[in-house]
Image (cartoon, rainbow, N blue to C red; front, side):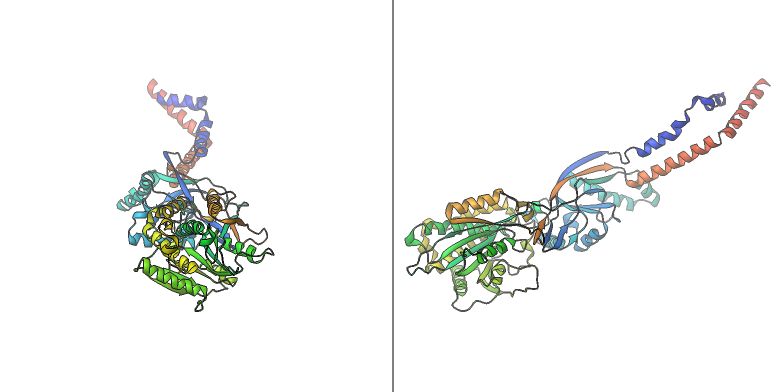
Length: 554
């Protein structure tokens, strides 16, 4: 009976094209059916050129399968892991062979152990020293992303604990994750401009000859992700001290009888992390201009850099100062002030020659020393190679405010002694003491905004505008100098795409699509041969039907 029904079907009721086109529709349908999706903000590595040399991450878009730190094996995989789990060797291997890297940062950067802090500090600076061709992104901690990372890692452990057959079946039938960041190819920013602000206080001298002291601090920050580089200490601390010096000395210089015997020029320079491009441009305008320079008769240039890192203070020079020179006198005043205010604080001089063969300068004062101006940097770091100068862990939560206020007092005391020849308290009195509230307020304001050069080198940046407003309030002859990249031979170039959004989709693994495709191909081959051999099959079916009729009639 059933053979007769089959015979009727083969005679014309079955639309054969369904057997062919249905599998084709399956093939061309979305390859990875999405089971669930998640979305997170991400932050890309810095991307810039300095003196014609490319730095940082050169790619942005990602559409790859997620794999763990120990399970990826080719450029079709995006390694998804905790930042703390990375090592220097694993990162170098990933950047040369993997397709992309997505690293989740620790939940609290201010509560890391000393060992974890040093590990991440080393790792971050090794990453920053590399030119990376693959997209590298960082993402803040979230429980949902943590669960995804654990899920990716657990799939490996499950496969290792099962037999080979079970592991193979699980790899085909199990679920995976697809990492997608939609981003165009990064392009050069044409609006990049590094602003440097200066203002001055005019001193007084009976003989009319008034030398100048310049106080300089750069205001930008640097780290493995521009949008997360807050630079609370490097160099938020230097900026906070400079602004407090502006406040107290401007009050004193407001009256002629209390003016010091020096002009004081205050400079907030941009591009400090870009080889001090702001100071370079400012010096060119000051020294190469036919209009004259406000630092032509400078006694010394004092640069402030990272002043809350240690309990020791270092005065960095490119050339040992001569005995009796203004720099030598200030060094003695700095040591004396430290011993008076905080005897536990040591002050040391550090001499580092400028190597003109190096493209990158170590300290900001070297920009001035190259132009034969006496200059030095006051810092709590003993070497410019200290990794704490460039890290996203330099946050408000990690800033030692007690140390910053103490060092503000020491620097102000030393400067007052040198300008007036008297102690700080005898000059200012109790009403003009260093205000912890002001220092803390400025440090908090500065470190609450990411200040990577890629982000703040824009026209009318709000933070730069606030600096200018403060200078206008306390200083005279305030001016902004702007450095822009040369069109033919740019000293620096910044690129778009510092961040974005990552979409994490829970999907079937890529091998599932391969197995499904093979199964469909086999199915089509079988259907092809069935259709090709249909007459023979039809005869066989008819013969079975005829035999059944004969048997039934008999």
